[in-house]
Amino acid sequence: MSAAAVGVSHLVQSTRAGAEYGFALIWAVLLANLFKYPFLEYGPRYAIATKESMIEGYKKLGNWAFWVFVVFTLGTMFTVQAAVTIVTASLAAELTGIALNPLLWSAIVLAICISILLAGQYSALDSAIKTIMVILTISTIIAIGVAIFKTDTMVATIEAPSIWNVAGVSFLIALMGWMPIPIDAAAWHSLWSLERTKQTGKSPSLKDGLFDFNIGYIGAGLLAVGFLSLGALVMFGSGETFAANGGSFAQQLVSMYTNTLGDWAYLIIIICAFTTMFSTTLTVTDAYPRVSRQIISVIKPSFNASSKSNYRTLIIIISLVSLFALYITGSQFVFMVDLATTLSFLTAPIIAFINYRLVMSKDFPADFKPPMWLRVLSWSGILFLTGFALLYIYWTFAI
Image (cartoon, rainbow, N blue to C red; front, side, top):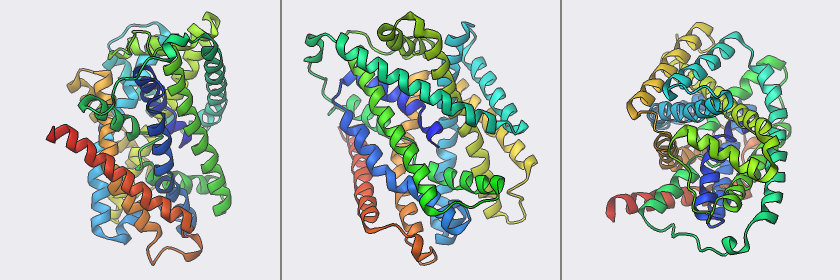
C-alpha cells in the first residue's frame, strides 16, 4: 500500500503545493495524513481479525454500506486508474525520449502492467520497488538539504498566495484527496492481506500487521512533506509554474533534482520516479479487478471470487474503460489528476464513517476493536473530512 501511496499524491500534488504555495500548505499534508490514519489502519485490522475482506464486512454491516461502497468505487475507479496511468506515461516518455501520443503511452503502460499481473510476476517487482523507494527517498533528502543552502533568502520571504478562494480551495481538496492515498485503499489492503496470508500460509498477529502498516504509513507521510519542501525550495517564487502537459511536468520534476544534485543524477532520478509511479499504476491495476471480483461475488454468491479467468476479464475491461476516459479528456494531465483526487476526497467522509462502523460493530471481535485514542481520532477525522468537503461545495457552488 505504501508503494501505491507514494505516487500522484507525492510526485505531483505535494510538489505542486510547494511550488505554488511555498510551505503554506504543509499543515494540510500533515492533517490529511493524521486524520485519514484510522480509516486506512482498519483495513489490515479487519482482515487479521476476521479473515475476510472489508467488502464482505460492508455487506454484513448492511446493504446501505455495501452499496455506498459499490457506487463510490464505480464512480471513481476509472478516473483514478486514468490519472495514475497518465502520470506514469509522461515519465515513461521522459525516460525513453520517445515522443508518442500520451494516450498511446498510457496504453503501453497498462499493457505492461496487465502482462506482469497475469504472469504472476508481481512479487519480483514488489521486492525491487523497496530498493527503488529507498533510493528515491535518499535522493529527495539530499536534494532538500542542498536546496536549503541554495535558496535565495529573498525568495524565502515571498508571501504565499491566498488559499481561501475558489481556485485555492479546489487545489486544497485535490491535494488532500489522495494524501497519502484514498480511504478506499483500506478495502484494497484487506484483500492484499488475505492474499499474502494465502501465499505464505501464515496469518500475522495484529501487532505485526499494524507494525508493518505504521512503518509504511509514517514513511509515506514524511516523504510527502519532503516533496512539498522540494517544490517550495526550488520553484516557489521563481516565477515558474508546473505545466499542465504531462511531458513538460515530468521534465520539471526531474529538473528539481538535477538543479540541486547536478546533471549526473538525471538518470537515477528519472528511473526512480518512473518506477515509483509504475508501482502505483501496477497496484491500482491489480486492486480494482480484485475489488470488483469481490463485489460481484457478494452480489452473486455463485460467482467465483478466486477465479483467474474472472480476474483476467475484469482487468482488461477496467483498463480499456480507463483509456477511454483519457481519450475523452484529451489526456489532460492536470485535469485528470485533480478530478480523480477531488472525487476521492468528496467520498472520503462517508467511506470513513462506514469503516469506523465496521470495526465497532457487534460482530467484530472485541479483542481487535480499536483503542479509545483511535476512536477519538476517528471521530475527529470524520469531522475534519466532512468539514472540508462542505467547504469545497460552498466555495464551488455558493460563491
